[in-house]
Length: 310
Image (cartoon, rainbow, N blue to C red):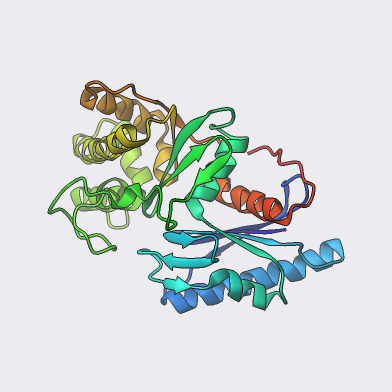
Protein backbone atom coordinates (compact mmCIF):
# COMPACT_ATOMS: atom_id res chain seq x y z
CA UNK A 1 0.00 0.00 0.00
CA UNK A 2 0.99 3.61 -0.53
CA UNK A 3 0.32 5.81 2.51
CA UNK A 4 0.57 9.59 2.14
CA UNK A 5 0.04 12.31 4.75
CA UNK A 6 -0.30 15.77 3.19
CA UNK A 7 0.77 18.50 5.59
CA UNK A 8 0.90 22.26 5.23
CA UNK A 9 4.69 22.16 5.06
CA UNK A 10 5.64 18.51 4.43
CA UNK A 11 4.41 15.48 2.50
CA UNK A 12 5.12 12.32 4.54
CA UNK A 13 4.76 9.02 2.73
CA UNK A 14 5.45 5.33 3.13
CA UNK A 15 5.08 1.97 1.47
CA UNK A 16 3.56 -0.54 3.88
CA UNK A 17 3.06 -4.29 3.99
CA UNK A 18 0.19 -6.30 5.50
CA UNK A 19 1.49 -5.61 9.02
CA UNK A 20 1.23 -1.85 8.27
CA UNK A 21 4.93 -1.61 9.05
CA UNK A 22 6.55 0.87 6.61
CA UNK A 23 9.34 -0.68 4.55
CA UNK A 24 10.06 2.61 2.79
CA UNK A 25 9.55 6.18 3.98
CA UNK A 26 9.76 9.41 2.00
CA UNK A 27 9.42 13.13 2.74
CA UNK A 28 8.98 16.08 0.42
CA UNK A 29 8.30 19.75 0.98
CA UNK A 30 4.71 20.73 0.23
CA UNK A 31 4.57 23.08 -2.77
CA UNK A 32 3.90 26.71 -1.92
CA UNK A 33 2.98 28.01 -5.38
CA UNK A 34 -0.74 27.35 -4.99
CA UNK A 35 -3.24 24.48 -4.90
CA UNK A 36 -2.44 23.24 -8.41
CA UNK A 37 1.22 22.88 -7.46
CA UNK A 38 0.28 21.00 -4.27
CA UNK A 39 -1.80 18.52 -6.26
CA UNK A 40 0.97 18.09 -8.84
CA UNK A 41 3.44 17.34 -6.05
CA UNK A 42 1.11 14.70 -4.59
CA UNK A 43 0.63 13.01 -7.96
CA UNK A 44 4.35 12.98 -8.65
CA UNK A 45 5.14 11.49 -5.25
CA UNK A 46 2.57 8.69 -5.48
CA UNK A 47 3.87 7.81 -8.96
CA UNK A 48 7.42 7.70 -7.59
CA UNK A 49 6.33 5.47 -4.70
CA UNK A 50 4.41 3.15 -7.02
CA UNK A 51 7.52 2.72 -9.16
CA UNK A 52 9.63 2.03 -6.08
CA UNK A 53 7.07 -0.49 -4.85
CA UNK A 54 7.15 -2.34 -8.16
CA UNK A 55 10.95 -2.46 -8.01
CA UNK A 56 10.97 -3.80 -4.45
CA UNK A 57 7.91 -6.08 -4.43
CA UNK A 58 7.50 -6.99 -8.07
CA UNK A 59 4.03 -5.54 -8.61
CA UNK A 60 1.80 -2.46 -8.39
CA UNK A 61 0.36 -1.20 -5.10
CA UNK A 62 -2.89 -2.80 -3.96
CA UNK A 63 -4.20 0.58 -2.86
CA UNK A 64 -3.46 4.11 -1.71
CA UNK A 65 -4.43 5.87 1.52
CA UNK A 66 -4.36 9.67 1.42
CA UNK A 67 -4.63 11.88 4.49
CA UNK A 68 -5.25 15.56 3.72
CA UNK A 69 -6.11 18.65 5.79
CA UNK A 70 -9.29 20.69 5.81
CA UNK A 71 -12.83 19.60 5.02
CA UNK A 72 -12.86 16.19 3.33
CA UNK A 73 -15.76 14.31 1.74
CA UNK A 74 -14.39 10.84 2.30
CA UNK A 75 -17.23 9.01 0.54
CA UNK A 76 -16.83 11.11 -2.64
CA UNK A 77 -13.01 11.20 -2.46
CA UNK A 78 -13.11 15.01 -2.55
CA UNK A 79 -10.82 17.45 -0.76
CA UNK A 80 -13.49 20.09 -0.23
CA UNK A 81 -11.56 22.89 1.44
CA UNK A 82 -8.25 23.68 3.11
CA UNK A 83 -7.44 27.16 4.37
CA UNK A 84 -3.72 26.38 4.55
CA UNK A 85 -3.38 24.69 1.14
CA UNK A 86 -5.83 26.99 -0.61
CA UNK A 87 -7.78 24.30 -2.45
CA UNK A 88 -11.50 23.81 -2.94
CA UNK A 89 -13.38 20.81 -4.34
CA UNK A 90 -10.38 18.84 -5.57
CA UNK A 91 -11.31 15.28 -6.71
CA UNK A 92 -8.07 14.02 -5.26
CA UNK A 93 -8.94 10.31 -5.01
CA UNK A 94 -9.92 10.23 -8.68
CA UNK A 95 -6.81 12.13 -9.78
CA UNK A 96 -4.50 9.76 -7.89
CA UNK A 97 -6.36 6.69 -9.17
CA UNK A 98 -6.02 7.96 -12.74
CA UNK A 99 -2.31 8.60 -12.26
CA UNK A 100 -1.87 5.01 -11.03
CA UNK A 101 -4.00 3.33 -13.73
CA UNK A 102 -7.05 2.72 -11.57
CA UNK A 103 -5.47 1.71 -8.25
CA UNK A 104 -8.11 1.99 -5.45
CA UNK A 105 -7.68 5.16 -3.39
CA UNK A 106 -9.08 6.02 0.03
CA UNK A 107 -9.17 9.66 1.16
CA UNK A 108 -9.42 10.86 4.76
CA UNK A 109 -8.92 13.99 6.80
CA UNK A 110 -5.31 14.04 7.99
CA UNK A 111 -6.15 14.44 11.65
CA UNK A 112 -8.85 11.77 11.47
CA UNK A 113 -6.20 9.49 9.95
CA UNK A 114 -3.87 10.39 12.81
CA UNK A 115 -6.70 9.74 15.25
CA UNK A 116 -7.36 6.37 13.61
CA UNK A 117 -3.74 5.39 14.21
CA UNK A 118 -3.73 6.72 17.78
CA UNK A 119 -7.03 4.96 18.47
CA UNK A 120 -5.81 1.56 17.29
CA UNK A 121 -2.10 1.70 17.93
CA UNK A 122 -1.36 4.60 20.27
CA UNK A 123 -2.67 6.67 23.16
CA UNK A 124 -6.33 5.95 22.40
CA UNK A 125 -6.05 2.16 22.24
CA UNK A 126 -8.79 0.67 24.39
CA UNK A 127 -10.48 4.03 25.01
CA UNK A 128 -14.19 4.19 24.21
CA UNK A 129 -14.39 7.89 23.34
CA UNK A 130 -11.50 10.26 22.74
CA UNK A 131 -10.69 13.55 21.05
CA UNK A 132 -7.42 13.86 19.15
CA UNK A 133 -6.14 17.39 18.55
CA UNK A 134 -3.15 18.19 16.35
CA UNK A 135 -1.34 21.48 16.98
CA UNK A 136 0.74 22.11 13.87
CA UNK A 137 0.68 24.63 11.03
CA UNK A 138 -3.01 24.88 11.90
CA UNK A 139 -5.19 23.13 14.45
CA UNK A 140 -7.68 20.35 13.79
CA UNK A 141 -9.29 17.60 15.79
CA UNK A 142 -10.79 14.16 15.37
CA UNK A 143 -13.57 12.44 17.27
CA UNK A 144 -12.85 8.82 18.12
CA UNK A 145 -15.52 6.32 19.08
CA UNK A 146 -13.84 2.98 19.64
CA UNK A 147 -11.56 2.44 16.67
CA UNK A 148 -13.83 4.46 14.35
CA UNK A 149 -13.43 8.14 13.52
CA UNK A 150 -16.54 10.30 13.17
CA UNK A 151 -16.38 12.40 9.96
CA UNK A 152 -19.65 14.28 10.46
CA UNK A 153 -22.46 14.74 7.95
CA UNK A 154 -20.34 16.82 5.57
CA UNK A 155 -16.79 15.80 6.44
CA UNK A 156 -16.21 18.71 8.82
CA UNK A 157 -16.39 17.11 12.27
CA UNK A 158 -13.59 18.06 14.64
CA UNK A 159 -12.60 21.41 13.09
CA UNK A 160 -11.72 22.89 16.46
CA UNK A 161 -9.09 25.16 14.89
CA UNK A 162 -11.86 27.32 13.46
CA UNK A 163 -13.76 27.76 16.70
CA UNK A 164 -13.56 31.48 17.48
CA UNK A 165 -11.97 31.87 20.90
CA UNK A 166 -10.80 35.48 20.62
CA UNK A 167 -13.54 37.49 18.87
CA UNK A 168 -12.07 40.34 16.87
CA UNK A 169 -8.61 38.79 16.98
CA UNK A 170 -6.20 38.01 14.16
CA UNK A 171 -7.62 37.14 10.77
CA UNK A 172 -7.56 33.42 10.01
CA UNK A 173 -6.97 31.83 6.64
CA UNK A 174 -10.60 30.71 6.71
CA UNK A 175 -11.78 34.34 6.70
CA UNK A 176 -12.90 34.57 10.34
CA UNK A 177 -11.17 36.54 13.09
CA UNK A 178 -9.88 35.06 16.33
CA UNK A 179 -9.98 31.36 15.43
CA UNK A 180 -8.17 29.04 17.82
CA UNK A 181 -5.42 28.30 15.31
CA UNK A 182 -4.53 32.01 15.06
CA UNK A 183 -3.49 31.86 18.72
CA UNK A 184 -2.55 28.31 19.72
CA UNK A 185 -1.15 26.55 16.65
CA UNK A 186 2.58 25.87 16.51
CA UNK A 187 2.93 28.43 13.72
CA UNK A 188 0.99 31.07 15.70
CA UNK A 189 3.14 30.53 18.79
CA UNK A 190 6.28 30.75 16.66
CA UNK A 191 5.12 34.03 15.10
CA UNK A 192 4.20 35.50 18.47
CA UNK A 193 7.55 34.55 19.98
CA UNK A 194 9.44 35.93 16.99
CA UNK A 195 7.62 39.24 17.41
CA UNK A 196 8.27 39.69 21.12
CA UNK A 197 11.82 38.31 21.08
CA UNK A 198 12.95 40.02 17.89
CA UNK A 199 14.36 36.71 16.62
CA UNK A 200 13.25 36.46 13.00
CA UNK A 201 12.12 32.95 12.09
CA UNK A 202 11.74 31.81 15.69
CA UNK A 203 9.63 28.68 16.18
CA UNK A 204 7.28 27.27 18.77
CA UNK A 205 10.11 24.98 19.87
CA UNK A 206 12.24 28.09 20.51
CA UNK A 207 9.41 29.54 22.58
CA UNK A 208 9.13 26.33 24.62
CA UNK A 209 12.87 26.38 25.33
CA UNK A 210 12.59 29.99 26.47
CA UNK A 211 9.66 29.07 28.74
CA UNK A 212 11.73 26.33 30.35
CA UNK A 213 14.55 28.83 30.80
CA UNK A 214 12.20 31.16 32.68
CA UNK A 215 11.95 33.94 30.09
CA UNK A 216 9.06 36.21 31.17
CA UNK A 217 8.26 37.24 27.59
CA UNK A 218 8.03 33.61 26.49
CA UNK A 219 5.85 32.80 29.48
CA UNK A 220 3.42 35.50 28.36
CA UNK A 221 3.21 34.10 24.83
CA UNK A 222 2.82 30.58 26.20
CA UNK A 223 0.08 31.51 28.68
CA UNK A 224 -1.93 33.20 25.95
CA UNK A 225 -1.73 30.12 23.71
CA UNK A 226 -2.51 27.67 26.52
CA UNK A 227 -5.48 29.71 27.73
CA UNK A 228 -6.93 29.89 24.21
CA UNK A 229 -6.39 26.16 23.74
CA UNK A 230 -8.18 25.46 27.01
CA UNK A 231 -11.12 27.61 25.86
CA UNK A 232 -11.32 25.60 22.64
CA UNK A 233 -11.10 22.28 24.46
CA UNK A 234 -13.85 23.30 26.89
CA UNK A 235 -16.14 23.48 23.86
CA UNK A 236 -15.13 19.89 23.09
CA UNK A 237 -15.73 18.83 26.69
CA UNK A 238 -19.20 20.37 26.74
CA UNK A 239 -20.26 18.95 23.38
CA UNK A 240 -18.58 15.54 23.29
CA UNK A 241 -17.65 14.57 26.86
CA UNK A 242 -14.58 12.52 25.83
CA UNK A 243 -12.78 10.19 28.21
CA UNK A 244 -9.37 11.29 26.93
CA UNK A 245 -7.97 14.23 24.97
CA UNK A 246 -4.88 13.21 23.00
CA UNK A 247 -2.61 16.13 22.11
CA UNK A 248 -0.34 15.78 19.09
CA UNK A 249 1.34 17.89 16.44
CA UNK A 250 4.45 20.03 16.54
CA UNK A 251 3.46 22.09 19.58
CA UNK A 252 2.89 18.90 21.59
CA UNK A 253 6.60 18.14 21.29
CA UNK A 254 6.96 20.56 24.22
CA UNK A 255 5.59 17.73 26.39
CA UNK A 256 4.66 18.65 29.94
CA UNK A 257 5.71 22.26 29.30
CA UNK A 258 2.44 22.38 27.38
CA UNK A 259 0.32 19.68 28.98
CA UNK A 260 0.76 20.58 32.64
CA UNK A 261 -0.45 24.19 32.31
CA UNK A 262 -3.15 23.04 29.89
CA UNK A 263 -4.57 20.66 32.49
CA UNK A 264 -4.49 23.47 35.07
CA UNK A 265 -6.22 25.89 32.70
CA UNK A 266 -8.98 23.37 31.98
CA UNK A 267 -9.46 22.72 35.69
CA UNK A 268 -9.77 26.46 36.33
CA UNK A 269 -12.44 26.85 33.64
CA UNK A 270 -14.54 23.81 34.56
CA UNK A 271 -17.57 24.22 36.79
CA UNK A 272 -19.77 21.12 36.64
CA UNK A 273 -17.94 19.27 33.87
CA UNK A 274 -16.03 16.03 34.40
CA UNK A 275 -12.75 16.68 32.66
CA UNK A 276 -11.04 14.14 30.42
CA UNK A 277 -7.51 12.94 30.92
CA UNK A 278 -5.13 15.01 28.79
CA UNK A 279 -2.31 12.87 27.41
CA UNK A 280 0.40 13.19 24.75
CA UNK A 281 0.03 11.43 21.42
CA UNK A 282 2.08 8.24 21.25
CA UNK A 283 2.89 8.02 17.54
CA UNK A 284 4.33 11.47 16.89
CA UNK A 285 4.56 12.70 13.33
CA UNK A 286 4.08 9.15 12.05
CA UNK A 287 0.40 9.08 13.07
CA UNK A 288 -1.07 10.55 9.90
CA UNK A 289 0.92 8.31 7.61
CA UNK A 290 0.19 5.21 9.71
CA UNK A 291 -3.50 6.11 9.67
CA UNK A 292 -3.43 6.52 5.89
CA UNK A 293 -1.93 3.04 5.66
CA UNK A 294 -4.62 1.61 7.93
CA UNK A 295 -7.24 3.33 5.80
CA UNK A 296 -5.84 1.77 2.63
CA UNK A 297 -5.81 -1.72 4.14
CA UNK A 298 -9.30 -1.30 5.58
CA UNK A 299 -10.68 -0.19 2.23
CA UNK A 300 -8.95 -3.06 0.42
CA UNK A 301 -10.48 -5.69 2.74
CA UNK A 302 -7.24 -7.64 2.29
CA UNK A 303 -5.91 -9.48 5.36
CA UNK A 304 -3.58 -7.38 7.49
CA UNK A 305 -2.36 -7.12 11.05
CA UNK A 306 -2.16 -3.46 12.05
CA UNK A 307 0.45 -3.70 14.77
CA UNK A 308 3.43 -1.38 14.57
CA UNK A 309 5.89 0.35 16.81
CA UNK A 310 5.95 4.17 16.74
